[in-house]
Image (tube, rainbow, N blue to C red):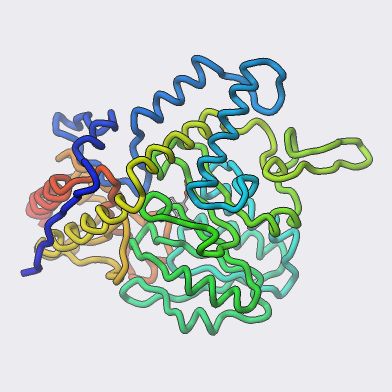
Length: 415
Ligand code: PLP
């Protein structure tokens, strides 16, 4: 029988943290909610909800446009949020932090401007076999437009990238590499330092899709020396509709603008328009002001708890989940990476993931079923989808124990 490690969280008071999240106190079908769909989106702490409300009640106004008091307060809060996020990822300059709608928007932005600014027919772009559709399709669209070629780093049966194959793919034709830091469908933590080092040895820039990393582990853009990073606010306890693109100034200064509109211009005439400096060059139109400010509040909340502490706790949590789930009869993991974070994917016997998901839901257990926007991963494993349980800093041992009880009950009914 698998050894079940215990979970110690000396640095975190999980009970206290849970009380910060109103939705965790809700019941589903009369049962206390077990929320294990955190890779899809995380719940929001009271401080984030309060920040949103305060913006609309006390200083709702447009940014960077008004001389009046409300606009000044809104602009200050919006820019303060940028500083918080820049410090959080250790950006050299806060101007390297661009507010977007989320990971998808950030990747589309870079694929678009990189395509228009750099890519020529015959050039190559590298992604990996375990990408979310958001880190595949924008590059496909761009490659189709530019006559470029999309190359894919293969993975093995454990759900780990085959690094020798990656090294062999890199060539003079490669113009950019874009990979997930952590896979949303398998939980694999990719060796991003090695991926970046190998690309940089050939002067190739690297973009990281950090949608499933930013909430689980410290990410230092200078230490990684990464060129672009994308993440979503709603996956790190912030609101939906807001996200971040980090880009090195040397790249963002020289790449062309993305969308045209207010704020991104210096001067406009019908003959010629000149563009604004960073970060405004990439923030056309009225941004999600309340979202940006509330994302700043979410990041501050995470910083106060400490991402190192969260990382250490969640590692134990994932190990505990793997050990407990291993005891479920007929359960097989999809992907068995050595280094895993945030999520566990599995199937039970020949039970369709959707059927299992429905019966878990009736027991108050929210998990995700399906292809998790990673159809190529499902094709690789020749399966229609998986059941995915994904974790956050407020997940506790009882959540996992209740998941296991619910799976056993559901499987007994479905067999
Ligand atoms: N990339 C990864 C790895 C993800 O997990 C997700 C969302 O699940 C995305 C990209 C897309 O994020 P969003 O829908 O917030 O833009």
